[in-house]
Image (tube, rainbow, N blue to C red; front, side, top):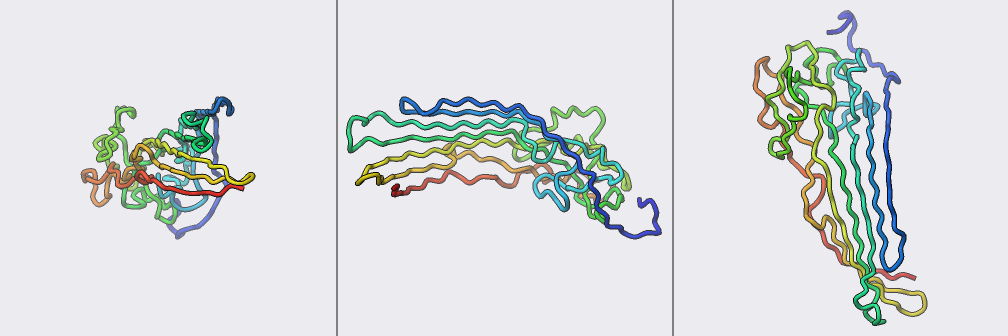
Length: 266
């Protein structure tokens, strides 16, 4: 409720946002020699904040406005773009099969692998301003209660049709804040492999003709987006969770794509 009901909506902006970033970054590289090159890197990181943007909505993971504008400490959590584990690898290999034949040499195989853990997100209540806190003039979203004794490690099921267990949440009385922390759960991870096969054919002088076969998403893997976050509609006090809660409705990458190309290098 408003602290002073004699005043209407007041639009004010402060510089109260905080964030921290800590990481361990490792890498290993074999420089190009003997016809091949390999590079791998791994980052273990943790990004914490109490808000991800200046204004508006993070269209992926939640509201950038605090549930309780008078308690920003309650918003302190992993950032919506926090990816705890990131692994990348790339390599180049000059195929030796026809190395002794001037007309057939010049084949090269390249590959890139990228893997990361999922982003955090906040389960929410579909009806805005359920808490009556008035954040964003009554336009900010709220989070539901999480039932006491719930093991956070067992909420995420990993099923794209039901990514998290909605039975562990309950709709708190209207005019109160939910106990679910911000960015309480994590969405699906991401993994992708791209590859290319090239043939460099020498022409006159330093000019080369390059034929390219490129394959994106070689394994044709579906990388899922963040699941549907609203758990309750917020129409009545004792309503059941929404049937759509936790459903994943789209992917964040395309299916396998293959393209052919020709380049003139000079």
